[in-house]
Each structure stands twice: as C-alpha cells, then as structure tokens.
Image (cartoon, rainbow, N blue to C red):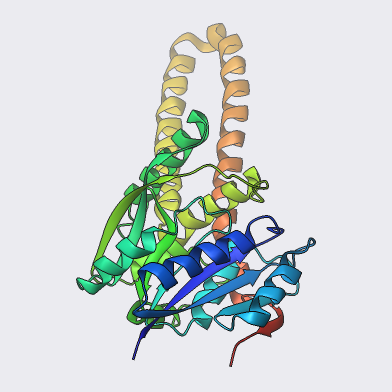
Length: 314
C-alpha cells in the first residue's frame, strides 16, 4: 500500500497562483514519486477573488485536492495549523506557500531524508531573493529568538517543513490560540535535520503579509517560547532602583556639605530622571502587556478557525 503524503497550502486572494501550485505538486508526484499517494489541502482564508472558485473546479476533477474555506481571514498560521490537524498523511509538508517561493521540488529531498529515519526535516533559507534590509532583519530575529527561546529553534527555518505523523500526533495535543508553528514543531523534539535552499522572489501577485503582520508574528514567537524579556525587565528595574538609591545618597552628601549651591543642577537632574523613568515604565508595561494579552486570548478559548465549508474530506 502506498504511503500518503499531505501537502498543506494556505491561500488568500491567490487566484494567479493556486492552479500553478496544484499542477506543480501533481507533476512532481506523478512523474517522480509514483510510489507515493498524496493529498493537497488548500486552506483558504475567505478570499475575495476567484481563488475558491478555481480550487472548486480543480477539486471537482481531482479528489486528491481538498479544500477548507474559512468564514473569514484568520491568518496564515491559524490556517496552516488547522490544515496540519486535518491531514491524514503518513507525513505532512506543513506549509507550501501558494506563490511557490519555497521550491516544491524539495519534496523529493524531504522524502529522501524521511526514509533515512528523520521525523522532522526543515528547509533552511540559506539565501533570500529579497532586499538587503528585510533579509538582515529576518536573520537578526531568527538569531535573537534562537538565543532567547527555552528550546532550540532552527536558524533561518520557517514553516516549510516535512514532518512525520508522530510529530503531527504530538501537535494535536497543543492548545494554542496563536500557533507559532515552527516553534511548536521544534518543541516536539524527535530526530531532525535541515536542508538548505534559496527562497525565491514572488513571480505572480503581491504578498498579503503586511509589515505589522510580520511584527505581530515575531512578537508571538518571542512570548510563546521565552520569558527572558520579563526577566530582563525585572533585572533592569532592580539595577535602576539600586542606582537611584546610590544617587539619592550622593545628593544627600552634596546637600549637607554645600547646601543650596548646587540646587539648580538638581532641578535639571530631576527633569531628566522624570522623563527617563517614565519611558522605562511604559516600556516595561508594554512587555508585561504582551504576556498578559497572550494569557487573555488563551483563556477565552476561541476556536482556531471557523470553517465555512470543506470539500473532498471524508
């Protein structure tokens, strides 16, 4: 019996890409992986263009194509995780972007490593075909997260990962309101390895990820897998308190020895200190607020996504 491979593709207003994505994956399996069966799960975030219509036409003639249509846009990572939980494969390609910036041809390399016994095979973006500033920001963030996280998260790796069903079963135990999928996969453990590749530029359409979305996802990764920002705030607060006590003692000595000769200087110091400590307090409140916000949304137990319809699922 052929082993089943599940391919997850999130999409939102990707009418120019979904058919090409489908045909590319189909060609790879039919020509180069005839010993494997596959299912291609498209997770649509309530596209406003003809994406869903195109997918339904494809699914009407190819039952290996399955569609999950959300009632609204819940975000790519919610859709990806919902797709992973819906997969039936012996192994799952956690995220193949519809724009094919991650090369689908790497499925061959992923399966080769999988057959060698690896249960998590992640793609490593050794080179990015994007501007220098964004590439540098991403590299800095990945290294910051890896150094701060309480688990090792592979550098320059995204959700473009090939995972065994044992990993999928482990992910089913997670209950996270905002799944940071790459971190969740890394936290499962299991035998893993990486494969380098070039992250290509988008050929058709425009990216739906806004700069704010990147910041939001980055902060989610930090607060989900480390409490070091809170510890930094605590230690920095202690340092400032100790420094303030020393400075107060110094001012007392100055006042006793020279009385009011240096009063004008004290007023300037007071003004600077007032604004400095006010800024520090607002910064600390912002860090604390991120964690409290995460707790707030988690305990409210909202569904991961709300589905409008499913197609070709048994």
